[in-house]
Image 1 (tube, rainbow, N blue to C red):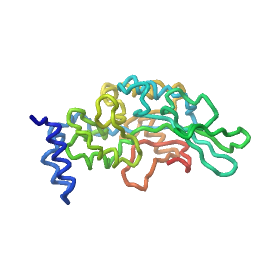
Image 2 (tube, helix red, strand yellow; image 1 turned 180 degrees about the vertical axis):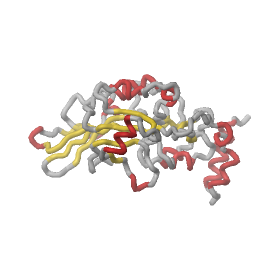
Image 3 (tube, rainbow, N blue to C red; image 1 turned 45 degrees about the vertical axis):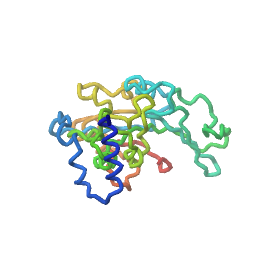
Image 4 (tube, rainbow, N blue to C red; image 1 turned 30 degrees about the vertical axis):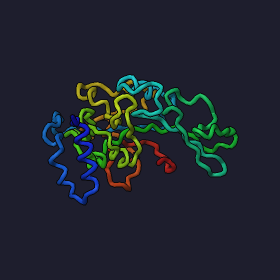
Length: 261
């Protein structure tokens, strides 16, 4: 007997080869009918990262893995920290070993399968850390391409993934311009940061915000003019990643360097 997941997967593959309008997928989009619409009027979650405060300790990554059941030793992670090093010759070097789970314990740049690159301190002109996570886009391409409605957006702006509906087609992973999606190594479905939606709905901080000892991460309601996050976004110079894609990301950065992509 064919399972529901197999049926949906076969249906998605068949539809993928047809030039159908987006509206055609509504017939198999259960989240349009059953999505949790618990968002309150005037509530839109946004995230703020202060790169000046991030020291690359990796405590945020550890906390996220524990809170959201992502295997500790897995290379994938819902959030990660990138280290950027710019040398006097103008070259940019970047790495994020194990998503920076254990911080950065060496001055050598991790090149993955190519080993390590030793950079001398006297050759460095600039070095900094940049935390990354799902941007919870206002116009999420991942939700647009999901053929079965497993990826959907709540009224308060958070994009979620329903593991019971995901068929593992990978369309959302390919559609995300920020590279934040991955296949969960245990559940074998699409996975990503959800702003710890199960926590923030109860008035709690996200796991990463709570774990950061330097206040480099904040989350708030961008529709509330009195929210500390909103005040910073409106009064200070902040930036977003890859604005040219038109996804309207809701993760804002203080001190975002032009080299960061």
